Amino acid sequence: MLSHYKIITLSHQHTNLRDLAKFVLPELEQTIVHLLQSAKENFNIQELFYVSTCNRVMFLLYGEFNADENTVIPFYRHFLPQLTASDYTILKENVKIFQGTDAVSHLFNVASSVDSLVVGERQILSQLREAYEFTRTQGLCGDAMRLLMDQAVLTSKEVFSTTRIGEKPVSVASLAVLKLLRYALRPDARILLIGAGQTNGIVAKILHSNAFTNVHVFNRSLPKAQSIAKLFPNGKASLLSELNEFSQGFDALIACTSSPTPLIDLHVFTSLVQNEKNPKVIIDLAVPNNVTMEVAELKQVHYVEIETLRQVASENMAFREAEVIKATKVIDSNIEKFSRLFKQRKIEKAFSSLPDEIKAIKEKALSEVFKKDLAELDEPTKELIEKMLTYMEKKCVGVPMKAAREILL
Ligand SMILES: NC(=O)c1ccc[n+]([C@@H]2O[C@H](COP(=O)([O-])OP(=O)(O)OC[C@H]3O[C@@H](n4cnc5c(N)ncnc54)[C@H](OP(=O)(O)O)[C@@H]3O)[C@@H](O)[C@H]2O)c1
Image (cartoon, rainbow, N blue to C red; front, side, top):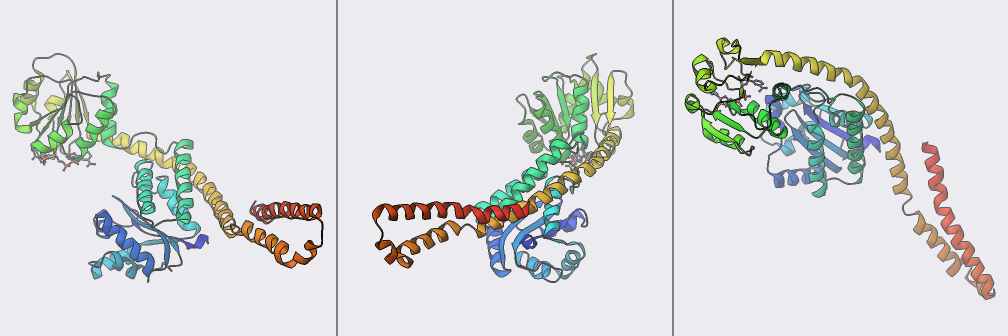
């Protein structure tokens, strides 16, 4: 029954991300498997799938378990016995439970990134697929989940291919690299990354995927700089304190640290530029800025700062959000498609024993019910009757299946 599909979820839509972290299952895979397995037994669930991302924790289940605001507490207690009374208050106030068509709709919205914190980010589909593959191979999911997940993947692909929901970058890191590309820098351009935090880590990955090779990372602590520099064939790492002595020049510089005071002032810039006269692209992603206005205003410098990029990011986000209307239409038609597929699958399963049952009736007719009558017939007549019964057997199997399919159309 479609109503056996249920989703129990906490997400960024209703819960702040710090609270959300309390409801993530322990990281160890074997512990998760054990907990999910025992939850299936304890709560009368046939199939159980779990996924957590940085902005949602979701259980998708198939079974008779009556998921509601009362049962959700013991359900969570099973997984996270350490939760406190105040955590349960957060849970009760924020948890969302979907059932039947609503559960299908929620999953399709999640898979298509309509429900994401950053609408149109493609990563969610691979996170869902990975989590499903994990639960499937651990024997936690079966046919009902396979059918639903297959359709969720198809829906997501259709949304991304027929709408523009995933177009136009919305992160400052991608917009920063896009800016560099506009200045037509060569792949071996000398790029300095100042800072090796989360944001510059993402910038580095995007630089790498755009084939930039020559990146020197400066950071307050060396190990983070080294791990980013490793991405590039000509990657190098140094301590931020060595920036003043750097004498190899540069073409572009991306600064992104949490330093409360600027790091690139006129003195540092003059030393870095090494009397070179070519234009220098400087992208300052830090708040407060890492680059002084004196440097930003130099003729030789093409300066891009975070506020400009944030403005573009929010315009692009508005563009993506407008595409949600089109995405919703695609999702709705896939919900209908899934509902038909699900019924069809139910019928196939219900009829799966039909061929054997009809064959058994034929065998019984020949070997028991009409045994004596057949014994009085000559061989050619017996053969003919057997042939006719075999023909009937094969033809009869398809009749109820065909009728059932026609009802669904
Ligand atoms: N997260 C975002 O979405 C986002 C987007 C755009 C811009 N920003 C801005 O980018 C900056 C960094 O963000 P993030 O997310 O990458 O932060 P993060 O992951 O916390 O990294 C902070 C970086 O700043 C360095 N740092 C911290 N204090 C410093 C100091 N006093 N002097 C020199 N370096 C220092 C850290 O060096 P260690 O590794 O040695 O600690 C690290 O490289 C912030 O100004 C933030 O406002 C953030």
